[in-house]
Length: 164
Image (tube, rainbow, N blue to C red; front, side, top):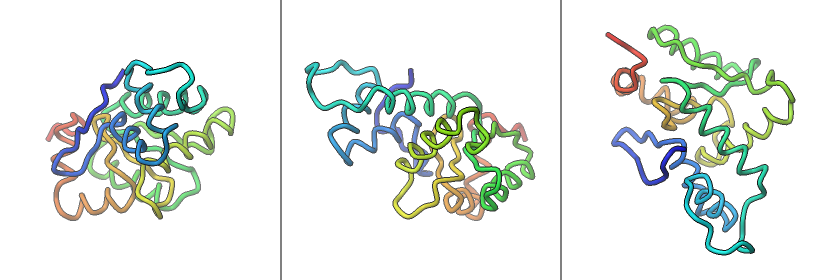
C-alpha cells in the first residue's frame, strides 16, 4: 500500500495516497478514509468512517495510478482528454489510459470519476486526471502549464516514462 504523507515536490506533483489524504480537510469521513487507505490504525470501531465501498474506490484509484509511469483517467468523448493523450504520445510517452465511460460496470467508472474529482481543485473538470510516477500531476490545465513552462519532460524522465 502506498504510504501517506505530504509528498509534494516543487512541481506540485502529489502521490496518489497523499492526494487522497488531502481530502481530509473536507470531512471527518474523508479523514478516516485517508487514514484507512494509508494503513493507519483505527482509533475506535464506532468513530466516523467512510463507507467501505468509498474506501475500496480510493484504494483502487491508488493502485491504478501507481501501476505505470504515466496514468491518464479519461473519458472517450472528452476533447481535453484527447488533447492530453495526444500530447503525451507526441512526447514519446505510452501512458496507461483508463476510459472511465467504457469500464466494465458503468457505476465503477462513475465512482472512480467522482473520487478523482475530489482530488482536483474546485471548478476543474473531472477528467482528464494525470498521474506521473504514481503521483497526482493534475488535470488538463496543470499538464499544459507544466508542458509550457518546461517541467513536464523532466517529470516524465524522473518517472521513467521517457528515456531521452
